[in-house]
Length: 492
Image (cartoon, rainbow, N blue to C red; front, side, top):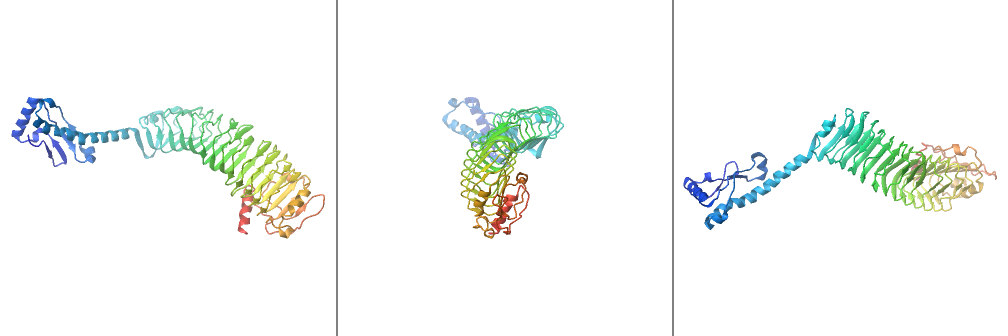
């Protein structure tokens, strides 16, 4: 029958009986009529990349193999094998491209701005939104964002006093920030499938009582401030970069499964008598805790930066497994109910140690293993006993003042004073130790003593009053201990 295919000028294989010579066309027609065979009119692009421009056309293909002689079958079935070889991959490619186009929406300019519920409904066919979604203050009442499963950028609703509820029954991931700020009439959040957010920032979010999520298993940064949330139990992560919880008056208990905090942990001014526990936390960068009634860190071993506890209401505090702070301070100021403070395994403070105005703390003997303080030690309170049995090195100043008589402890500690003050030099800054100072609890500033040695005790014996050269170091109260440590290292 001759060839049924030919390469055309436009780069296509063309399978069609009308390309045969007239004599073979007649023969083809006779075979077709006799054996029930209709050969295809088929155009297939040689280069699949050309499909988007030219497309594929198939008119008809029908075959009754059992009626064709063997010799005719071979020449007639060849176009079928070519169909399978070239057309099937092409159809798959077209289908994949079509599916991708239907499920992925790339946002022009990077941001989709939602002014109404109708705008949000326009995203219903997008499984993935490549870019950010910003909901303006024009959106009021109940807002629903259903359809998208992934937003690769941010989802932001800010300064909207009119929105009452936010929901999505499909959204699972937000690649950027989920930001709700100044949504003062927001009463409900319902995003039960949301499990992954890079950054969660909720501030002044109205009256929503819970987070509206089943489980947020991945989040790097969290800020929840000035909310009416009753709990944040939906946050279920083991590692986090930073967490800031403040001014959430109805959150009274928080006990997460977090094992590692690589940035800052800040908890302050939340519910009355708030109880906090981090049973699995092993390593933390920095922490600042205030206004809690109970707190526990049973597994914490290392604080890389600083640990500050101010104005809390707990009556006892312990770091049972903490061994060191690598670069920062340990600070307890104004914890009026605290009677016991213990860190039995602590051997090094990488910054300074500040214990001040904890008026019920009388025995300062909870650091039995402490050997090195890179910064300064400043102690202010109603101490009747002060002991550091293993202390060998203080690279900053040592400054102790008590309302009670601690003369004997001052004499024991004076042996470590700088050599210019008659000691062995294990304290490299100035040494001050004062008993019976009625004003002791009023001094929580960052100013250390001036090298007066042992003063105010019943013995009436003052130490050497020479200045060591580091006397009177004064910086901001929040930074003085770390600064003292840095200065001491520079003087080495």
